[in-house]
Length: 260
Image (cartoon, rainbow, N blue to C red; front, side):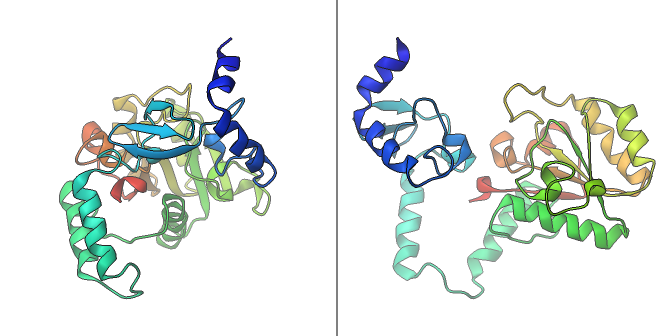
């Protein structure tokens, strides 16, 4: 039995899991993506594409920091750069020339990023995009696809979430241009969210290129801001992001862990 064998070879992880269950709400995990039956391994260290747990088990890491570690664990150049900066200070609470260098690098790789603003996370970038699009269009409603994920905030997760008016968000099925145009034609929507790739959630069908290529003209026709959420795809898909592989330029782009 594979479950019994897993428990037998992971006694240390089981011990930590039992302790964590008494503390953390998500079945002993600090993130819902780390919930696993009977429990997930507890990692002690990692290098390159591998990581090891408290019981000495070795794994090939397909998670890679949820997309943040494009170069793998403990890449020598990254370790060296972090060590050098740590010796100079970590959080100045002021402007720094590296911010400019960092932003210009993003612009060179992703031409759609004419202007850049940094936020603590991709979800906050998406929330600010909603505010920005509302100011720009004078509208308030958000349009998104049922297959996509843009964070846990009320206005990007489901219609009628506690704390917001039920009609603030409309969720439509992807891959259906006629249905999408029927909604956009109402001219009620400030922004249309589209997730890069379209299928990071298990079981979803990736976007067809022709469907995505129809969105720029469609959103322009009805005066809706179009955002591509590249928090998952970002620079892992291509130097210019997923949008470069499809050949489209959105009005707004949100990025996340991949730019770190």
